[in-house]
Image (cartoon, rainbow, N blue to C red; front, side):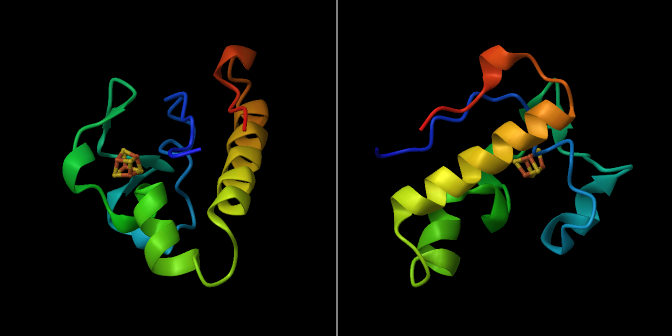
Amino acid sequence: MSKIPCTSCGACCASIDGIEFLSKFNQNGICDKLKNNQCSIYESRPLLCRIDDSYDQLFSSYMTKQEFYRLNAKACNELQEKLNIDIKFRVHI
Ligand code: SF4
């Protein structure tokens, strides 16, 4: 797998409370760069929002990329369930 199959549900961008890296964008738990469920600064979004770059720079010495994707997908799906997001957005690895 060359990229995580993100379904663009927007759940992660709408749940940034407590994420220090994104605190300057936090507006009541929702990233203020999220517009119409899309990132308005996509090309220059922070490292933490870039899965592959985060893996390369922060996590590659701890786990394989496949494991990193698996953990991300698990977190995505748990968050979607918590927010009652339609099942069609689940991330399948
Ligand atoms: S900067 Fe963009 S990708 Fe990152 S949380 Fe905000 S809207 Fe989402």
